[in-house]
Length: 386
Image (cartoon, rainbow, N blue to C red; front, side, top):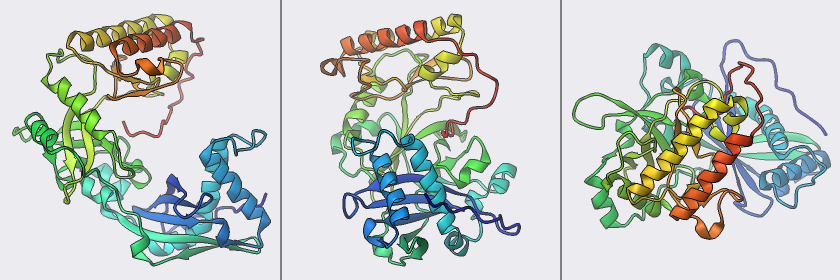
């Protein structure tokens, strides 16, 4: 399969590009838009078999990429791992578009500049990241040569989709318990300044009361999709806020709601759980942890579920990756809603106390039986700016 190598780095111009997501089926089943962040701009690259002419090698590579993104029965099980296929294609695509990136994003805007963030010269706002400069592009291929094309059709650009259909009564009741924030009043705070160029912000700072002190929160964004279950999730958070759940219960709570200018919900502000080095997801972390510490986590999870049930609440989010370990080695439950990992809870028990108990028992079983593989000391970069 043909490949394209990255050209030598230009010593006078910085460029850092990262593929953020792929959206399939915008025009046809084999069509795709890949979203790439480069130097603080977003590039939406349209791709389709109809844009590929007399190029069987590139077309094969593209179709393998599409099958890998779908990760379903269409993907050839004898082919490489889907994640590797997608990552390799993204690397090739970025290399193809680098000349266009350098033309349209030759510098780094202050709000995305790691050096200025590191020194505190700038304090970026969530507004800068939700409404960044966007460019529409298209990948065209002829005789195995790939051409990056700037479409210049602003009407075709996909803008953030915010939830606009919250029930008015729910909105009014939530305002009695948490503050609503405009994106211009939410400060972005990356754990590592270099992430500003390539990642969506998740750690933000807001003033939750009138003390002029800012509190770190986790930002759950809806900028790239419409979340149909938002009303249900907010109702569950509201029940928690109105409950007598102990303040020290290790459950991420709703701290605020970020609302765009048109009234749509841009995201939620939740309890920020500071994580240490390594993979902080409990499911994976178990393999790297001695049994005595796993027993501590098992006890904490069972205790937290019991606290929720005692307060008349159901967690409901029975997924293996929604328990994390903070920097103090305490286990936290993240998220509410009727979500589950198959095999951890029966589908008909999701969203019930019985389902919570079944899930907790499965997690405890995993903590007890996972083989111990000592952590080698290298820092794991999970991709999340926690």
